[in-house]
Image 1 (cartoon, rainbow, N blue to C red):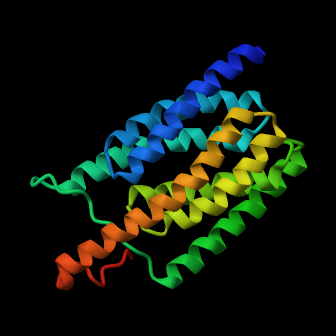
Image 2 (image 1 turned 30 degrees about the horizontal axis):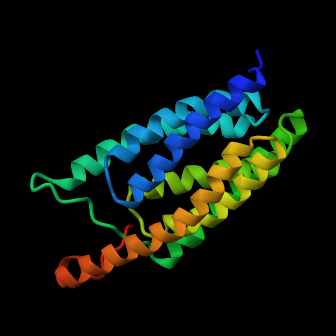
Length: 208
């Protein structure tokens, strides 16, 4: 059953507020970001299905699981002393593999959706979905480069939401793009502070 226009806008507005809260809290490396992510995602699961974006709707199920995992992983990684989980980086070959897998998954699911006549923009929908799957996992692992991936993924998502008339969500992603830039520089500063504080343990530390 499709949502009435007024109902859609009301739920979308609430999801937008929670989405902004998530990213601002993530930028500050606060565990509360995962609470905001969970409830924002719960709303978007239904909104995207109603807007004929099946891949984006399915993505929200993954987001729900990652909100729980991210909260657990950040909390566990903080340790008894109450320190935050350290920011890490990837070597270049991890990025090559990640991009190759992302493009492969996009081609496969986009082709399947297109053949089945599902979705309005199946390849862009698929790219945004698989890109978000990858990048959300990177956030949970506290990989610095997640912010750079989000710049690309959020730009594609912005176009999708404008096309489907989800204007408040599109506005949210404009805000996201701005916050992402600040988030990258803040995490990079924290990463450098870690390296300066403990050179032997963290200066060359990379995720494998």
